[in-house]
Length: 86
Image (tube, rainbow, N blue to C red; front, side, top):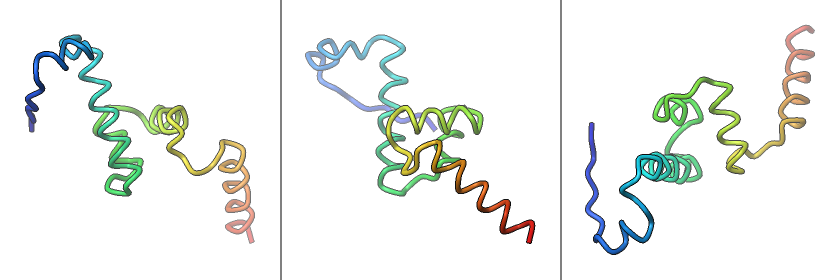
């Protein structure tokens, strides 16, 4: 689905929205907001943006959207592995 949004010319020019990278930034901002509001999962973020699992994790990390640091995440995975091994 393609969604069209009308933005007044003065703002489109001010924010350089006529440039291709800007439309990507708008999409990323929209997706990050929906993720923050728990309307999208990390998997859906990756799907919308066309990212792999690792790229999605990095994207969310880079934008401060993950609740855990990489170290906390790895520690959690190690704890999970120990529980499974029991």
